[in-house]
Amino acid sequence: MPPMSAEDLEWFKSTFRPIPRPQLPEDAIEYSLFLLSSDPAPATTDTVVQRRARLQEVQKSASELVKDLLKNYIWQRETFGLEIVKENDITFLRGRTNFGDSIEDEWVIVYLLRELTKKHQDLWVRVVDSDGEFLLVEAASSLPTWLEPEVADHRVWVNNGHLVIIKPKNDRKRVTENITLEESLKIALHEPGRLLRDSNIEEEAFYRLRKYPKQIKENLHCALVTIPRKVAYLLHQKPAYISPAVEAFYIRDPISLRTLRARGKDDLLFPPDDFVTVSVRFTRVGYAQVKSQDFPPPASWAQSLPPPTDTKRFAKAETGMKVTCGFEMLLGDPQNQDKPIIREIKLLLEDLDTGDEELPTVDEIQKTWSMQRDDESWLDISFEDLDTELKGQRDKSMEAGAFGDQSAQENLQRIVARFEEFLKDDSADFDGVNLYDSDTDDEPDDEEASSEDDEGDLRFDEEEFVKFMKDMKMDPSGVDLRSILNKSSKGRVEELEPSEEDDSHEIEELSRQMEAELRPTGVLNISNQDPGRNPGAVKGKGKDKGKQRPMPEDFDFDEEDPANIHLVKNLLESLQSQAGMPGPAGNLLGMMGMKMPPDDRKRKS
Image (cartoon, rainbow, N blue to C red; front, side, top):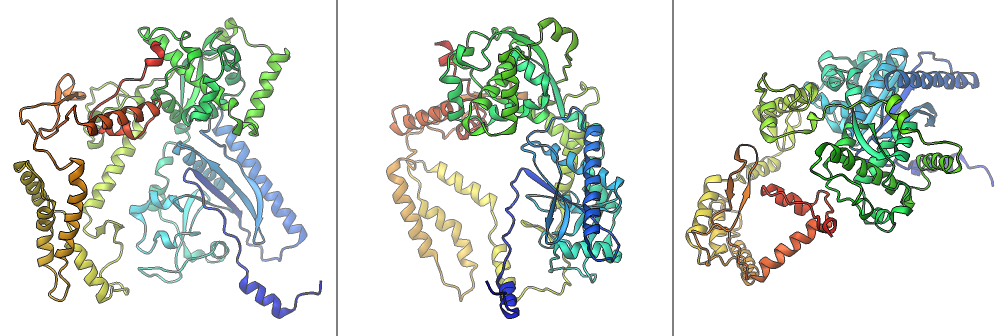
């Protein structure tokens, strides 16, 4: 093939577009580590080798930090890790961690990286997630006016334990240009005047790290559970196995549940016998996921649980049943067979089957294994306690740990304080706080201004709405949607400019069509109400415990109406299909104050 001419080469460069990197998932964090050297010497083979050697030193330092700070730590989904990569002639370290529902895992990584920059002062670190530069989100109330999300990419760095922000070339109230990664690295190396280090911004950005490394231990929870000895052996060999087992249990679906339903007791990998009570270390999120699930025991487990009246034994056994079922579904699901952790677990089980390894004796477990059990009060949250904590009015005489921990209380109060600041800010709108003064260069044109004026008229009138509702209740013989819609739109139509077209006839036609569609369904027919009838009540919680909460007076449930029968039937079927997990039917009933009992028909049979 003949060499490409200079003209063809320029044409190729002008048309070539690199394939964009895939967007980060919502529950993942990506971190990039760069070593910036002030040496102006051109890159040679020796310098490239030296750079890779330095990056390997950083990798080694990161491994040592993980061993020192994260001993016995359990990740919710994936661990922290770094690999050497090369992009656009830049060699650096990169890692990505999927943290699942455990936000604390994300901040553990930020803490590790910040500590790493203290050991290597020429190391510059960038961390992003699905929100982009999420450190700026934490420091939103302290940021300069020019720093918007649209121009924040590649401007936020961590160096020598501090937060560094790259400023624009000129001090302006509004910045529109973005900078590339290469430009950002050059500025960090050669233009120190454009590097902003602000203690207030840094304090807000790293607020969640204020109690690290002590906070790391508080991210875990130890609980006593009753499980088959084979499961106890696996967790003793590697406690981190608990996270994928909990994940398999929490996100179970009908396909994974077949593993439990299609097999008898003798066909299970972990049959419900040979039980031992051991201490299992969970992530706090994982433990809450296990405890919060209403999971009826499979048929093979029905006779293996103690009676619910024995609350302590039953709680340990029920949690152990859920964990064991998680391991069963994890190993039985075909889509997991190629995962390294599955192969590890199966190798351990094969060693037990061949006799190369033996299960620990009950006496050994009781004498040499840890039996740590942490307080579970952080799981107990009531609306009254939450409201008290948010207001900062907690009674000091209350039992310690009655609501969350000190960190949770401070975070809640901080969130509420920020929200109150937002509400009090007259320059804020639905899109956020308006960071620009009225004297900015970018003034809206007349068309935009008139559009904003029109939108200002579209506001909710609570008194008028209540009056409409009263009118509907005073005339139960029928509801005239046309009159209501016309009445609500009358004021708006009168306020239109004379030049604007009167669209009241369109609203009237629309309301007529709506009424025509709704009238056959019977929704608008409320003439059979009995004002003295109380069709039902639900029990309340907290201060209303033991009382009855009446349904609205205009609630009508005609048992002979087929529509109502179908409604209840569909609602119950939806609840049953949820299998104890959250779902639309349960959420709707919960909003009405109703808590449905578990479906124990199979258990009784």
